[in-house]
Length: 550
Image (tube, rainbow, N blue to C red; front, top):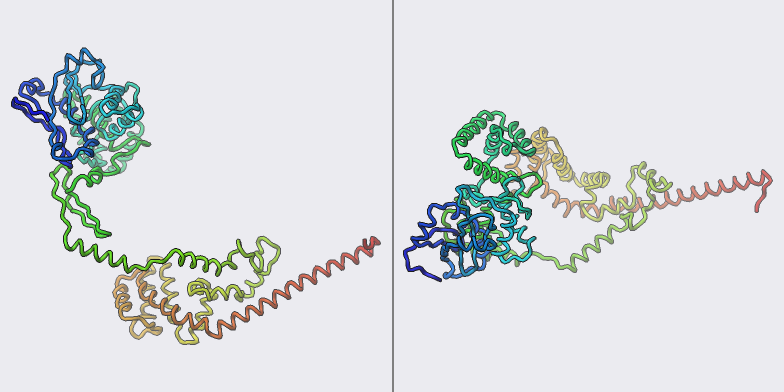
């Protein structure tokens, strides 16, 4: 590190959350020569921020927390070697060379008052030189990323991208940088568009998409459009008092700002992800600490430029929460892959005869064959043998089948416990009711099944009854969810098992096997006899015509 023996003045260039600070160190003589050249300092800050944002990932240690730069006047060298210019040698530049142990970074400014315009080719060459980029395509891509954030922008184009075709670019003013965490509202955008329509200048004419946005905003803010118009008029009056050159530059900078926050249709909106969220990993002021599902985040909404607070240390409560979570994970029931595969195979084998892609349907589908046996069985209103057998697979199977529910309800009536199934069906029907009828239906179900002295009272545990009583006060479709779940488990574990063992189900299953078997044999025997008769009639007709038999 080089220290100057003369009195020096330090101008801040860059400061990030990792403790990396960059200062431009000037001697008194150099400071006088530098004078009030604020734009050159602004350009240096932009360029330094762009490069150090990537360099800060590799710069660590206290020796790099303070980097000094020395100002060197190279005007004469710039005139002699125009190829060494930061942005080309077509202008007379007061070139500023920033040097550190990481490399050199240069930035220039013309002697005129307004910020200079730079060729895109010069920017690409400068990126390739100072960032050691060999491929021009990569340099153009990096320049496009910088332009998309609004730090540099084309003078005559709304699309913020880098083109290696000689387009003029200009540095954005620090006031409009996205690092200031701008969140412009639609009213601000409406004032900006309205202000541009008041100025009869070709360069301020609205693009097609901007005119559409203005019309849309005018409809949205119809009630306060007069206020927006007055604000735009006031800003136009202030702008007219400014110098012509300054007004042009401000117009271009403001246009670039809105091109970032209200981009052209089809362009990527770089502000969709809040820059403050992106900086949370680097900014310790907003701490988001997750301990296996336990999340704690600071509620501070301070801007990112406020000095950050130290990270909160892990406390005993955090460790206890982590221990509790890990113990819960140990007790968590986990299935082995072999058991899962075995369960899937068993399920497939159980339902294989009900899958028409694997097992041909018996009787066949009348829509793809000439056999109408299936329709005849359905007309008889008697369940088939396969249908009755499927009721025994699970409790859900019998609840899904209308005929199965009717048979199960008859069984429950014989055991004087049909109120359980009727309550379950009533709650299922409640979930499908229109919103205007829900409250009335909730009251009816409560009075029939749960109210004191109800005609069809169901048996609930105290916990479920207490929660249901609280839910009835704010009646909704899911008021009886706890009670329905309790009744479902009760029927599944008790009533359903007794139904499968009952004579009613066994007789129904055997009867369907017998009836279907006899009916199927008779049906096919009748079809065979009909075909035989048709053949005999054809033979008789042939003999009568004298053709005989071959």
